[in-house]
Image (cartoon, rainbow over all chains, first blue to last red):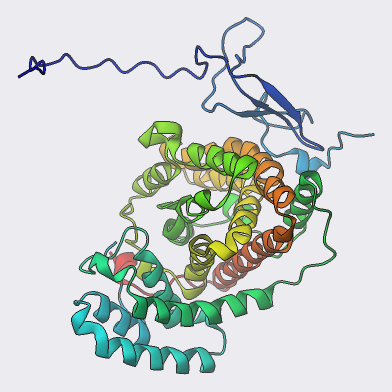
Length: 86
Length: 344
């Protein structure tokens, strides 16, 4: 028998990091009449430098000013008729 | 899924057939083919036909979670598939009648995305979300959960069937959306799990299909149209368009649904599903419109009409369900079918 049969300690579940070590290039899409869509490995921090609560890798940031979930987009730009082009 | 109660001759025969062996089912299959042929020719409106919609729902369910007591070998039984296609053909024809596409946009990703936002932004009848936010009673919130539960407890599954049929940018975008729908690896964050939690907070059974008997034909039709698009490769453009329209009409309604549940004193456990969708779908709608739908059309311009058809069809059938529910509520009736599940 070659396999190590000693019981293993439970494998610690790493805290899920949205920023993997292998940085994927960040892209920011300025969605026409909508938010800024950010993909890749980036940190989103508040004015104090602390990371902001975030539950998904790709986020949409408000740029119409009307979101109630700022800095995230909540789709309000569609109600206010926000235009990104003059 | 638990076996539903049949709603007529065809759904009775479908359930009887698939809960028996394939060998024993040959006579019923022949009889079923005849019955369906007569029914689809005579039905006034298949969208509202309980017997045909339930039969189709059950036939599709063989490709999802299966049905208790039904053998797995029925899934690809050619005679049973032929029966499904008879119903499907009539259903698709009816869904196509619902949709009139106007002038087609260009085939660039941005033009497709803009057209989808235009279509989904146009006012399309009564607003269930505003009613839920302001006026719905607690009983109506429970009814609302019944209608939603038919899909939300398997949220994302029909569109997942489209993944291997796409490539490149469109595929990456669909996977990005679906990964979020499925909780990014965290089972408790799956949208279907969040909805199950909402149901438990409402004191309801969160088992998939528990309230199927209470769901009217038009609610089943909103689900069947997703399976029609998801399970037929030739309709992959429609599956993509349907998902894009779904995501684009989600953020604001979910904010209002959340408000309705808070108004009745329900806590975060009940509202998290809706709150999560406000933020998630503001992301998804951008990915869905530009990268998924737009990306698909850029790589295969011949699919433009299918994408727009899928979007318009989803909006039209969902509007019909909303009209059904709102008409019932406005006249003080239940929007559900009488069923043992709701009586308990």
